[in-house]
Amino acid sequence: MEIALAYHHAWTARDLDAALTHVAEDVICETPSGALTGNVALKGFMGPFAETLTRSELLASFGDEDRALIMYDTGNRAVASAPAAELYRVREGRITEIRIIFDRLPFALARGDVIRA
Image (cartoon, rainbow, N blue to C red):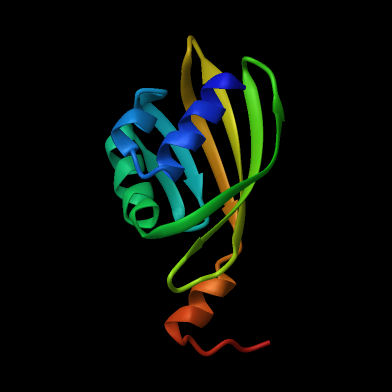
């Protein structure tokens, strides 16, 4: 749990280099956009979003030394509220798997995408 929280606090503080010290080089990350492999790909995915953050609020967290679940809400200039959850698997002191779940609708609306029911 401590490693997952340290990673979360670092990336939401816009310090991706510090965040990646908690991540395995060959991390597997499942995102709403598809799977990523490796910490370079993870940095490329998280970095642009982290740089735009205007706020981050940790809503809940639970887990142990092998698995953790964190729920949070973030905001940026385009989206006031973007709730998300991340499930982490930790092995030998590093995050080896991340599953990110978030609602893409607020971002689509901010871009002006047409949403059909």
